[in-house]
Length: 351
Image 1 (cartoon, rainbow, N blue to C red):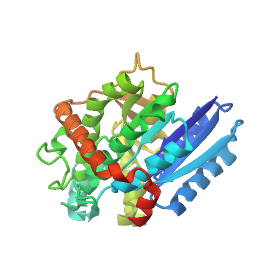
Image 2: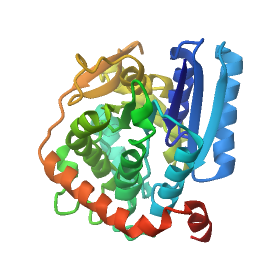
Image 3: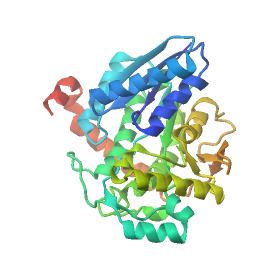
Image 4: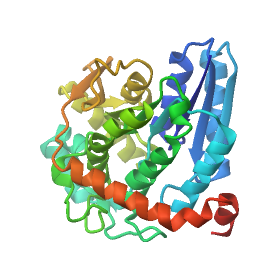
């Protein structure tokens, strides 16, 4: 038996820990292929080496462990098309696809606001912070909202074009979307779906992920036999925001996370390993007949740090409109890119 898993955003803390947990939780006698993604070759090789090292030091799988990589920038449609082309050329199936896109357009921290929030309510400050400053109106080279494209539309286009033949050729295909605890309905305006006027575009993109999942999972199941799940990793230390923290503020953040956990927050997992619990569960253990796909599966932990799964409802308001918007946009880009499919690698090299 063999399994092939593709993890987008592999170099992130969560992406690497999803890979590490696959090494442990996929039966050791199963041949496992992990496909990493990155925008650059050095980062792809770095991710592969970290996963190899983890296996050699901590796991030592019995069966063959294979690796592949695909270079893809989800804010560039030609790059996405090139990645689809390469995957279809080099693989005959795809069992698990983890959509772990998490790009933001941060420009810093409002330290005055951060201090006020931390002193008044550390749990709220570390769960739903409002002090991270995000740029407004940033577009990609394709003219789309950058965060919208990188976190939602680009991955959606990726999934749709891998459904047939790669995912549909698996005996038990799973698509796992990584959303966020920070995906409140109030963070998204339906007259700004590309998030170009939003100063909380990251959070808005995760709300879009929720709605897009609700609006697309049934069709993936009926057309291709693909089970799609919605998850979130809770709160954990992320590499993406380190540039705005010095050692003092980093350890201050960690302390705040532990305080929030001690105050009863179930979401402060802190470690990427625990954050990967829900994505791995829906990938390897969920029963589609019992574990409903309209729910959101969250990685949670107790006060003492013991991990568990916490399942929540998702507000479905607007999911049909979001699904239609994305399908229409996909068709537009299919038309724009139709003449570039024959030799995608050359097009990408010239881009």
